Amino acid sequence: MSTPHDAEPTWYKYVGITLALTSGLFIGSSFIFKKRGLLDTKAKHGELGDGHAYLKSPMWWTGMILMALGEVLNFVAYAFSPAILVTPLGAISVVISAILSEIFLKERLNFTGKVGCAQCIIGAIIIVLHAPESNGSDTIPEFFGYVMAPSFIMYAVLCGAGIAYLVYIIAPLHGETNPMVYITTCSLIGSFLVLSCQGLGSSLAYTFSHWNEDNQFLQWPIYPLIAFIALTVTAQIHFLNKALNTFSTAIVTPVYYVTFTTCTLISSAVLFRGFTVNDTVEGITLIMGFLAIVAGVALLFDYNDKMARRLLRLQARAEGDSEGAGLVMGSIGQSELDLDSMDSRFSMTKKADKAVVAPPLIKKSAGVEVVLEMENVDRSRTPSAAPLNPSSS
Image (cartoon, rainbow, N blue to C red; front, side, top):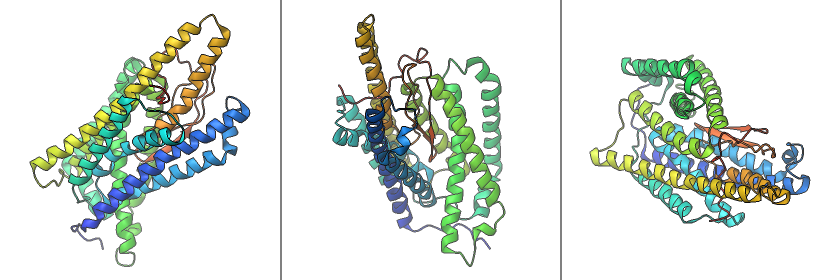
């Protein structure tokens, strides 16, 4: 029989931190391996051959394995640490990718990018030092006890109504012109996905330590919870695709990170009835750490816009010169590959130029990575969508 939630040992917090940071290291490193594989494939086959030649690259598969390991570690981290700690640390993968790109791919970050990396690291340190230790629930009955509370049911109904309103009323009217429509929808869905993963992960950790006494797989609600996770993963990927296929990655990525993380923290606070911080000062410190990460992510992707303007100027100068235009298209194609090395915990896909077939890029959110292939999508609607390319300043 499931027992009430007991105070978890202090080492749980540090296990969660270690898992979250290791996850960021693996995922950030995976982009370097995948990009190296894509570049090697492009050099051998030209513009990535038939679009699937990268599947024969050991480097690319090494990157995918690292990414899968990172995702597993990220999921397990929710079993030991609260969402307020694990979710913001997702930005660390961006920093890892940026640093390793400069070391191994010789792609130089400008000053803005370096400041952005520093801010992400500082924000992560602040959150790690002041994050609460309690995880909220251990068992499936305890988790559903929180879920069935009137306050959370009311919150879930309001969010569900808001999602339906955005999808069926607002999206047909403004979905193509306002990025917040799909981003907000995806963030709300993702926040419930994170809570579900946290509840499932905690119950699995509890099961492994109480296998004979209180096996949570014998609790039937665990199976609807797993089905709900699968449903929300699918829905989140769908709406994130819509946002990224319609608007510039430079716009979607930082806005999505902030919106998704904010929705997750609010949902977690409602479900577990607040955060177990020691005092007001610690709570404010956590908020400041989160804002430092937000500012760092914004600075990293500000360089994206600068690169877009540079490529557009180069393209304008090359008009009328077929050879010059070819060089421009090569630069844009190379930039498509560069995005892969600067992706984040809630990863991105990028629109490809009409003349370029983009490599498979990664969409990621709420600890789930999905390989997608973007084919010959018109860039004309998003002139600022050139991906982050730290190879020039």
